[in-house]
Image (cartoon, rainbow, N blue to C red; front, side, top):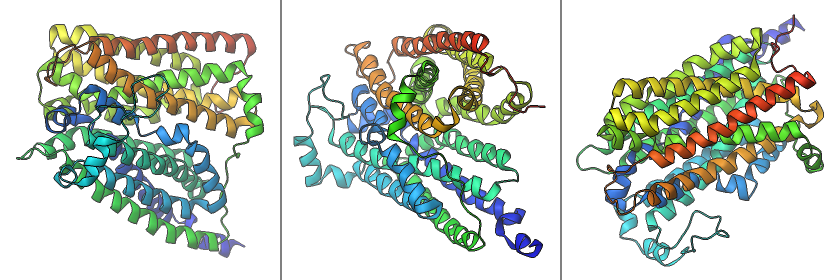
Length: 471
């Protein structure tokens, strides 16, 4: 028995950390693509005619299929039925297909194609309440096709996220699993730091071309797919050695009614969607906001904003350790929401008035700390609030509701930015006060929910303030 145990690949530190490197690399490249165009809002408007509404519609399109076609649920079913190996390779391939479409939409070849003519003449839906799609009358053809590519990529990225987590559990069960998950998430978040610096620098090489950084990132996604394929061979050998996947609780339609009737579920789900809607959509506009407020180029704005994801990646493991050993989960949620409100108010009023780079850096660093506080406290709190038998379905519903916010708010902010800047056509002259106030208002509601959660915890004794590690 001992000999068999020692022959398993997962018992070798070199092999299991190699598996982590392969999985984390693929997610690192995926995170880069999510924001590859975020620092290029100025160039997208001047070169391709994407005004704030068109840009907002594109930026929000990634979760569209996850929300309205329930691909989040299907991804989980595929993972359960087909396993990590198949699902990882499928997710990598889907991301490459989506990124390829996105790249083609931004090339000169598309501008001269009959496909552009088709998009000019179709998907011209009214900007009305029933139109939940990203497409509308007057949206540039390149934005329409880019949105389709981003939707497809989003399916692959969501599938990859849950697959990588399952893969880490498979290789690190009984070993350094928490450390491995923390490292994977930190590496993925560094992707955002890379993209806000690299994307505008690559696009700005004469002549300016927004498709150029997308082309580089497409190559990285292909490398990510290769990483998944190599991982597949390792995973197959591990299966042959008798190591089984530890599956999550499957999503059950019958559980939906029970979960939706729980007050605590709604508090957590709304807190989640409000908080994340004030962070990820903000990333889509942060570079242009800094350009407008500080008179910076995209490269200079990227150099300022990159401390946000780096700070969040650095602080998260320490906060997770504090939560495990000392607790204070509800208090961390409240502090995180409070810091977020303060930061968005600083971006709304103080930064435009002072044009201070030091104040801007301070606000971004505090926002990074906020982004570490809330996720570190939020996700481990769910099992304390929801019955174990419902936990898998509860997480699936929370992620689905979160994706609604990530879909809607980039579009809302784009429309708000356009309406609050009547007559402004220069992408470096936008006033971001009203959009920042929208983000701050989301934080205020999240803060109220945080206080409510803490009060209910004190009354009901859910243990949110207790450490996760029980002595």
